[in-house]
Length: 364
Image (spheres, rainbow, N blue to C red):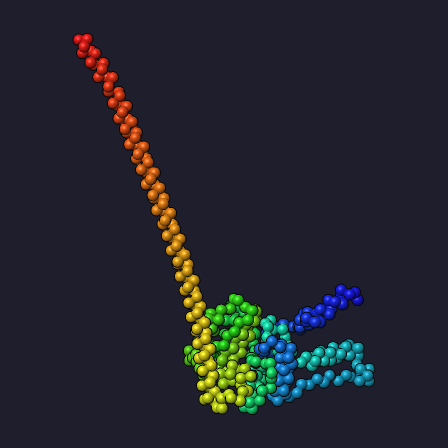
């Protein structure tokens, strides 16, 4: 290895150049059609992924039992001898398919497409049921089982993150909860990452209209809703789920729900969560007011600029008018001089004629 190559290699190890490029090497990305769990963290995604696997497997074992990694039993040589070649080949193919199916884990880490967010793809289980089970246990025991995981959001369905695709998908996805005779109070929790074409107000308005059409008895409740529709958009993928106890479990924040100073009963929890919701709404309102104020100042600045430009324009028009008047004055002066000149010429013309008439009179 040359000295230059050795230097580059050491530089990559020192500053993490090689590690970053291999972060998701060989892994798949979050795609339409997947189910799983969306997990947010604070900077340390690798440690977050390890914590997530431990936590999900612990509680999945409680609900669904441990994973079975046994390989399918191979046929004995004697049995194979009794079968013809074609039957043996078919059996081998069947065994290979079964083997590959069993090797696929029920939890697989995917590239979410956003920083500080990981996506764990699930197989053969209900993400909402599993996450609710985790939060319920943490809420009761007040035992914090994670250091870097913040929020854990189930993803029961995914679709393309475009309004037309979302409307079509959600009109079917939401039926089990909101289509008559089903009904309930609800709120919508929307978040977009690395997506510029999804406006929060537009999505919420369209989604609320869709739920209202399913059953007019469905009512919005921003304090203690029975159900929360979670919509998380990352790039071009929309992740959705409908969850219970969203406010009670502190917006599915594992750190908050496990705090000892948290709510002791349901009512106190509702009050605390409502206060946080009010605070967040107030901060959002203040942010919008600040934006409105900034826009107004920008508008006033533009109006002042327009006014200044108008005054400048009026000044130029006044100058043009003054120049025109000066020009008209000069033209009037020229006209007056011309008339005076014409008068003198007329006077000069009349004088010789009078002299001739005088001479004629003398001759007579």
